[in-house]
Image (cartoon, rainbow, N blue to C red; front, side):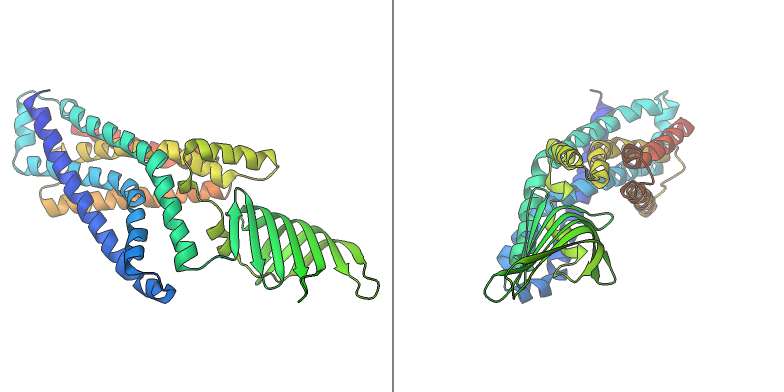
Length: 358
């Protein structure tokens, strides 16, 4: 490895860890202090609350690695441009693509790092963090989830839901058992599906069994639709279902296959599955964009400007990426297109910037 490549690697990595450390420090401070009232109200110890915040750090790191890479690339090449080092290197016959080699190596290394974190570390830490959040902080003990199945204990009610669709806020395979004070079942509803409207659940394609107190027998009736006030909201179910970030690629794929094998729509999870394959490549794309913009020798004539440009590009990427994922969740885009669209657009932008710089 040449001296120039070693210099670029050293400078970019040093600034990368400085930026990432600052971001993590800000996150810990804001998240810990911002939820202090909730911690105090729940009665959880501040040490346990701090553990809850620390467990979220691996997930935060995966979100900010691409931004830190982009900023570090812009800052290093921006300072080189300010000191006319880029012009000197070009005058010596050194190509922009030669400068790109160590930068792409760094991008590749951190892409592998993202895969490692997303597959091994994040599912474990986020599962533990969410467990502390729902069981110790918010006391959501009335709702339990195992696999696709959700069990809800209400006031003289026990409700079982086979599957909850997060994007459409619909429930499938619903069984509601209602009891009297002696814990004797007085009514049971078995519904194919249901959706939430005007503060109540509208259950569809159902069978209702109601206890006749005089005869002691259950009267059975069938309905297309009824409205039932239950003891939970879609937000409660969102907390109960297992999140995509709590599963690695293989677990999420198996979960999707089980959901689809039972005839339910798993579009939301398919979008998340493809995003797990697409997201690590953003590291390579960000260093490509950073190199292309600053290696021209015209952009990034100062440190504040380089940082502003980096934050602006990162913001545009996240807005477009989230927008595409939302379209995928809603079924307006195929899952694979929704997950990869932002990467493809910004890869084209980075490539054009690099060719223009050369």
